[in-house]
Picture 1: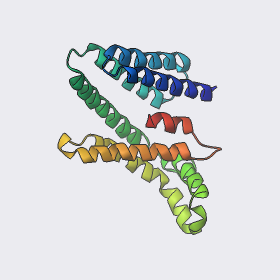
Picture 2: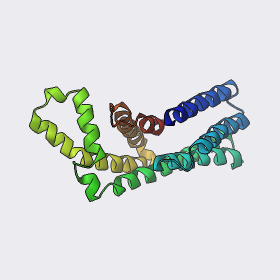
Picture 3: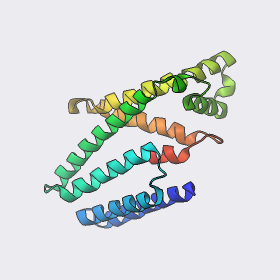
Length: 198
């Protein structure tokens, strides 16, 4: 069932993008396309949604409302939306990193970070590592995840003069979610990884 919902969101997003590409200057098409995707996704998912999906819905709503209500030029709208979404994502990653500072997440025996790293190592370079190095990487997983998520938030908050650092935050977020998306079964949550990259 969840796979069908992911297909619907991806297909709706692609359809909205195609509609907008035919008339990129039409703010009405942008708002209608984006709004349609958000409304269908919410109707299909709520209340059985993950926290990250609620964050995505807030971001989508910000884009739709900003494009609909800001009475300025297209360039000023895009700049305002980009700034707001950047701040939302910074808060999200800082909160995500902070909330992971707990005994359950920090324990390699129960942390999803350790499980994902173990699985990724198994399908990539795991056979090249000594058992000691592999164990150390698995145990470091929770700490690496926390530092990574907090770093993304901090980098996204850097001043505009340091825009390369902001881009580094976006790249780091993409790498994190690509790793999650590529984690093989049985514990993969590719849907989350892909949707977070979108």
